[in-house]
Each structure stands twice: as C-alpha cells, then as structure tokens.
Length: 401
Image 1 (cartoon, one colour):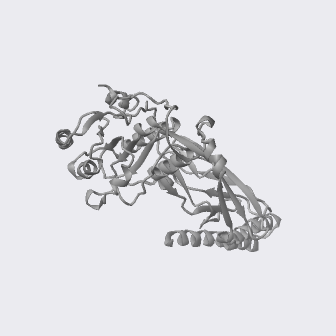
Image 2 (cartoon, helix red, strand yellow):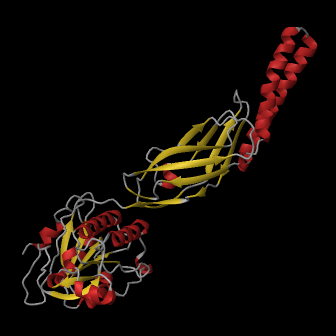
Image 3 (cartoon, rainbow, N blue to C red):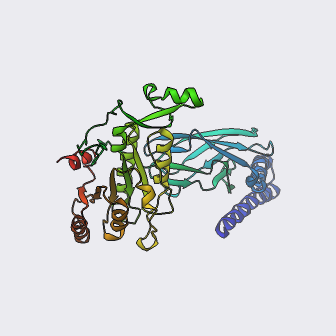
C-alpha cells in the first residue's frame, strides 16, 4: 500500500513538473512554438490529474458463471459486468480477474481483459475458466487498472465482485469396470460377482420411485391405492448391495484415492448399482445409496470439498448405519492400519471386507504400509494393491476366484 502511494505521488509530481516546465519555457522563450508546446501538453496533463482523482473503487463489478460446478479439464464462461457511477471518459480499463495459483481454476495464469469504455457506464467482459485442481476455490478481489494517454498516470484498485464468489471443481474420474464383489443371493451362497441384471421375477419389497427406474419395475397396485409411484425391489438387488468407504486420513496417495472413489461412484451410478458411500470421518454424512444423478452429485461434491485430516483428529462415523443392508464392504486407503480397520470389522460382522491400497506413482510400497497390509490380511481383510494405472480392472481382479 505504501509503495503504491509513493509511486502515485512520484507520477503526480512528474506531471506537475512537466506542466510547470513547459509554462516556464514558454514564458522565458516566448514565441508561437513555445506556447504551442505548452497548450499541447496542457489537456493531457489535466486528463492525467483527472485520472488521479477518479474514484476507481466506486466501480461496481458483478460476476456470473455459466455454471459454478465444473470437472477437471471442463470449462465455464465467466462474465464480469462493470458499472461506473459517471460518464467521465476513460481511455481503457484493464480488468485482472484472478491468478491460477490463487483460485486453482485458471488454466493459463492470470485472466486479464482490456476494455475501452469511453463514455459507457456499463459493459460486460467475458473469459473462460478451466478447472485444473479439485476443490472449492474462491475468487480474490478484481483488480482494475487505468491510465492516461502517455502512461504518465496509472491507477489501480481492488474491488470485491458481487454475485458468484466461488466455484467447485469436481475430482477427476477414470474408467472403472465396476462389478459387485462378494455378493450373494439371500437363498444359498451362489456367488454372482459379474451379474448386473436384476432378477425381475421375485419382488421382495417396494420403495419410492426414483428418476431413471424402469416402467416395468413400477408397482401399479400401490399406485392405484396411494396415487404415489412405487418401485419394486428384487431379490438380487439386495444381494448386490455394497458399501464404499474412503479413508479420509492424510496419506501420500490421497488425491489418487479421491480419483478412484469418484470413478467407482460414477460407474456405479450409471449402472444403477446399490451402493452406499461414506467417509471414515463422522463430520461427513453417509450417503445411503448412489443410484441417481442427484445422489451422485452429492457424493462428488463431498469428495471435491474433502481435505485430508490427521489421524488423531479422525472421528469414525456410525459404521452400523453405513453398513446396513449387508453386502461387501469396500475400503479405499493408503494406510490400512488397525485404527481404521478394527471399527469397520466390528460393524461388518459377517460381511466380507475388501481393501484397495493405492500405491504411489513409483509403484513401490513403503515398508510401513507393507507391514500394515500383512496385518490387515491376518485380520481377514481381502487386500488388493493398486497402481494409479490399474483402476479399470480392479474389481474384476478381486472378483476372480
């Protein structure tokens, strides 16, 4: 702040000395040429002084976005509406919206737009913002810069923009061949790891209709009685239920765990799988089923905002609620130690527990994590080691007998 004021004072002094110098030269030299130079400089100097007095902070900026929820690599158009309180002509306005390092969402550094407002009191500026980093990002104040014709006087101000103040970048996803693992019918123990087709012959219960349910699944008798659409639940639907748990503790592969979990949720939702999602921290709500677009949106939003937490700060959720419905329990972790596994095993009871341990980009497993994997296997957990390029066929490898 002090430096900018000093620079502004120096510029003001330069303009005043320039005018006084031209006037003194005309007075002592005399002649038409000397006075022509003075009168030529005078309007430009007066305009520079007007720029000095112009209240840039009185400008109002309103920000809007075509969508405030984007994925990594996806783009959204940002519109800045600038309103001025008066008609004073400005040569130009340079609008500096944000830095990529500050907002985490601009693909090519600073978003700068040049406007020539003239006498306009309101105008719009547009630019494209691309998501590059998962998370919720806030826009810093908009920087506005203007100057005179020759750059003698430059003035900048920071203005808080109204409207959209933040945007959310969803986690990156990759292809995952999701299949239920460890699933059984209620009768017998016949494994059906690759079956994604409902047995529509025996209905076991009904539930509220959800967007995307087939017309053939609608229970018309209930609709005739209550005038509410109900959907039939079938036998193997209950056998294919699974619970996906994400270890929220800090680890070297935390971002890759987020990417794997998001990929599973997206694929499971596309296949209408019966999947419960929870984070191993009580601060985050359990999503009972991820089988529709709204529930998938809720889960991905939760993942986008998720930050790794220290092991001591973690408070496990109520696993008895998260693991209701039977089926396999799938844990994604980078540190499968007893602290995270024992509460899950206690709540799971007879449910099979699978743990995907994500390895780093080097592919080597740290010795401490290797010891945790061996201890987890002794506890009866099915552990599968995954590299960052092995997500696609991870479920089929686990499902193989």
